[in-house]
Image 1 (spheres, each protein chain N blue to C red):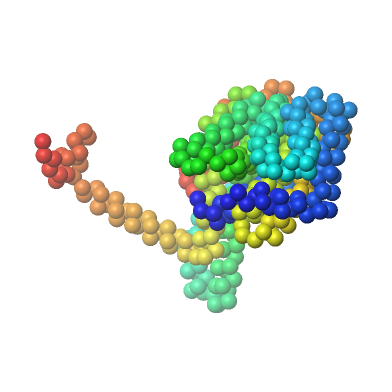
Image 2 (cartoon, helix red, strand yellow; image 1 turned 90 degrees about the vertical axis):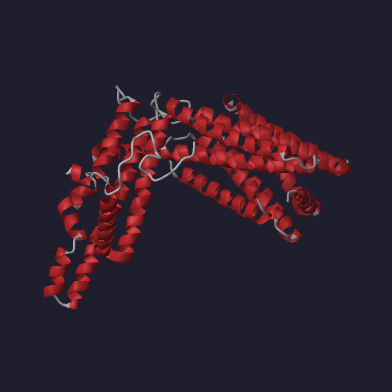
Length: 189
Length: 269
């Protein structure tokens, strides 16, 4: 590692440690008990309670916006798009928050379990992290392209997948154990 | 890179008044923390931590004496005591982990694995460096070893802090003070190592003062947080029959499946 890279890594590490310690100092035990109580008293219903599937399906579909575009003014169209985008963003954020809350609740529930499984914990955390990263990417995509643009992109990807599927189905099926069979490959013995 | 560190330390320490004042203030505070630990019987509760502070106190006194009466020996003494200090310091982390996570056996196992992984990685890296060869140059080798060990300690602290925050494990005032103080010391030392690798002796000297002030702050944190014994907080209310880990994990997965927005939404309806 070069000198400059070492300096950057050490400074970055120092800042991260400072940050972590600051958070630890700021989080008193009383606040944690309050969290436990809040979890027990008011379990959250999740993003689907506020934004049901039917609403989300319509938000990402083009039917409504086509109707508004055909019958409304330019200003109305813009307002409609803005609101749709806000709803879509709210939906993704609520899923993000709820996932975070569920994991935090899980951590608090298992913290004193003697049979805590490290591999299952790691798997769960990895899955949640992946979900959260996808949520953030979806948020960015909605911000950039809007729900309708995203739906069009998803449609295009779906079509491409369908086309690839059709082409793949046309390939001759080779025998399980012999990869050279029907593949056109010649393997000299 | 680290060869310049000692120079900067000497540069800072050779300036007459403030360095001596800081040095004496540090020694006094270290003695105060140890004396208070004996008086409050916290020494018996956190033996590794107090041994560490006692060691640092003796180290400071010996360094101070050697610096004044045998300055030519200071360099060797500095690196030798610094290395021993880093090794004893690793024990402080294990003590925080042992005492803080004692009521949480599962999380303690997780933390043990995280710490073992961090130190194994650091040892592996150091071993690989040693096998690659190079000069067996005492001060340089000890300095690089210190950097690696400090970085490993920083990662270990970070891992421990993440576990404590994620699992919402409350620490008592004493343990929190020890961890925050030691973490602050490690972070400032890392910043010091980075700063001393950068060009500019004035900046190095200035930062060396800053680190001494940081260390005084650390000692103040320890003095305040270890003023009186504070019990380790217990969980406020735990159900009489706690569900097994598998059961909680299954419930969590069910909840996650219910809110997932990327797959299975059609099925979940």
